[in-house]
Image 1 (cartoon, helix red, strand yellow):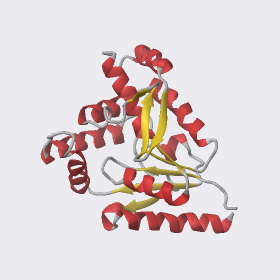
Image 2: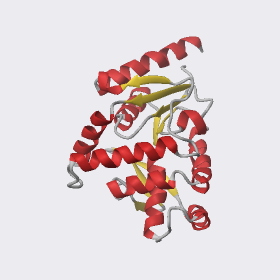
Image 3: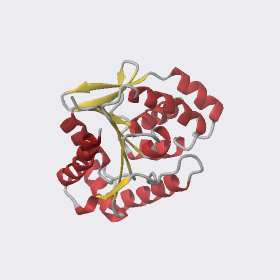
Length: 225
């Protein structure tokens, strides 16, 4: 029987993390954990409660009240807060930007750090995010970092958002450029590859090709165990 691993996939918005992470988890029979959705869930709750993204005291109290969990359906995993399905509500450009801002707050990161590590204790999981391999799971068994040029990532995200909002490609690119800057320059857990991460330029592969590349690395780990 093969051992179960903790696998992390980090990278900027639009690099293909979600598509690849879901497909890899399915191929391995692992759980898929979209950690960015957790930050979006807190951002949505903060917006609904009219809490400023830099009000740490109010954010700490808000986090203590959250009941974030993933529920699986025929289409995959959806994020719930308590009994409310919030998956569709968190997938908007507004919440994306708020999630980027709120992810820089230490009180939010401390709360979600324990949530994420709790999901990882049983292993057999693929964690998608921005600091999975650097902060949350520095001892992960396999770490990947997906990247692609900004123009490629913006086109991908524009197509993804086409049926949910009418934001132009130029607007998506500008938002993504700002989010990249915020994520990469924040003092707390900036977006960057872990020193031992396997960096994959996703624009050179199809999504299936990226998954196959990852499976090759994981099989090497299986052979060494």
